[in-house]
Length: 458
Image 1 (cartoon, rainbow, N blue to C red):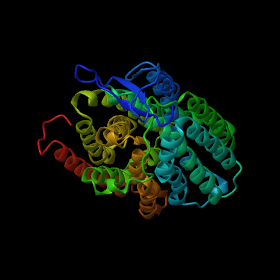
Image 2 (image 1 turned 180 degrees about the vertical axis):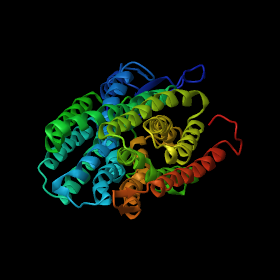
Image 3 (image 1 turned 45 degrees about the vertical axis):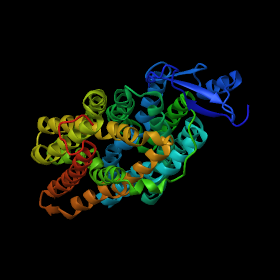
Image 4 (image 1 turned 30 degrees about the horizontal axis):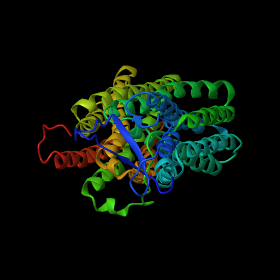
């Protein structure tokens, strides 16, 4: 059966097609459908012939695999604050500034948007499985190689650049495949999947801190690379697409003429400068006010854990009150947490309040951005490529956001008779102002979609 195409055919009585049960018919060039073609479609998508189920079934297996991909690919970079504190005290990196050490983690985080466009395009072209396996191999190799480094620039190449490349190539397939398997419950499903990054940060922060204390930073990196790479590879074997993807442009530049895409891209770009600042500097902030390193690692874990809970809860609520509405509210409340709580958090209790409140609502930024992409641009078919294009907006912020905050900390550090005193307020205000600017852009997007009506589900 040559020249077959996949179409969605409505029933003969002209009743609306239930989007949760899409009928896939494979037709020849002359419009006739054959049994072999239907079987071929079923083989390609991994679902029963004739009907492709969404919002359930094998989709939940996909969500479980995506959860673990997020656990490793995002949980490890989010826990870099533990390595930041450790590297600062190592004799190998004596005299290194907060800026230079933070740049390692920023480069690792920037790898996701830096390589998001080719990762998305490869996923649309070759499928999620093989692309994710390649990412798993790069993640394992990068961290193992980092364990043998002897200078800061070598860490920049391995734990920074290579690790960022690996996480991007592994992450995009696990994220983009979700919108293919869920329609009506897309927000909840995406929230559960991306909660893996929060749970990963919750678990990995204290674990990495304990491993560094017991085994040293080199063996900690080796174990993280081997175990993390193995988990990603196993999850990759589970991934598959539900419906065949249509061929699209590698980079659809016409999207940059779409005001909605530009504003969503701008929101991501601005907020990316601020997102990782609390994740990187809460441990060192805690040390300033007399808390222990273990308490600092615990706070990072709880920050990631609260983010994970927020991603599930806010993803669930977004299916009922609107994805754009929920994302706008999340960004607003996360901004208030940074500007009104963090500057006054000088005890473990108040800092705990900040990480739980901020973590919960900033989780919506992670879980709802891909669902808004699918809501606005999913009809283009090549959703992985479109997602990669928008995630490319995180590049400069992920790369320079935390180093800018680190440079502020270095600049506002003074030496007294009792030691060094660091003023964190400028870095906190930098993060809060970025989030505020992103909120303004998101409100503009919300009003445009809602036709200037504020209380409307969008």
